Amino acid sequence: MRLFWKQKKMGIDLVVEDDEKDQFVVGGVRDTKRGIEALAKTTGYDPSRAIKGLSSIEEGKTFVENFQPWREFFPGEELNIELE
Image (cartoon, rainbow, N blue to C red):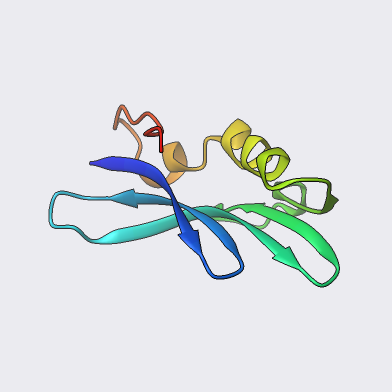
């Protein structure tokens, strides 16, 4: 399994890819008209895992990574974010 940031048109997604190359997005950062927004996915409702008005994409990445959302969806897997 791999954990990495994937470039998208309006930002980046934090992606877990399994051995069959299936991808699951566990977080993301978007550059919108209203500013930079970040989201760390969860299995329940937790508004503290989303934020708006950030100053940079890097700040958004740090926000998402701090929640370690991949642990919630893939417990027991030792995943480290691959460097670009």
